[in-house]
Length: 171
Image (cartoon, rainbow, N blue to C red):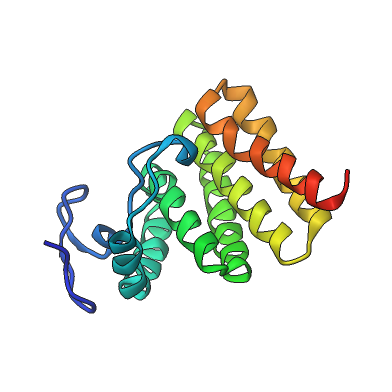
């Protein structure tokens, strides 16, 4: 059972009392192949968004790369569905910066995957708030990282948003 707002429970991942249990986790590494969330799922996230934001910040602070990488998918699609692109751009920029710091000591596959996805999500949010040049740069960075890893499933994310950005920009 999920904790009520303001409550915490013992985390199965770290065996401590933490907020990370509130972060929504996508069942698939690449959202396009996953089934769409239900209305109930979006409603729960909407009700728990403050706990989720808190858990997200906590997981970033703790450097829980794999958790952030998995949770990023659900959180991005929630923000996209709600049209919260400005907040999404800021949230994913902060996360990408933190993950990039972690990635430098030494780089790991999971860290690079998470960084690639975060940059793509940041890029699409930036595009939606009118920062097209920045968006394309972020999406290209994401694409380069994910291609270098041979992460075929995750490549769908930047490729899809680069194509959409080109289409909407008239390119």
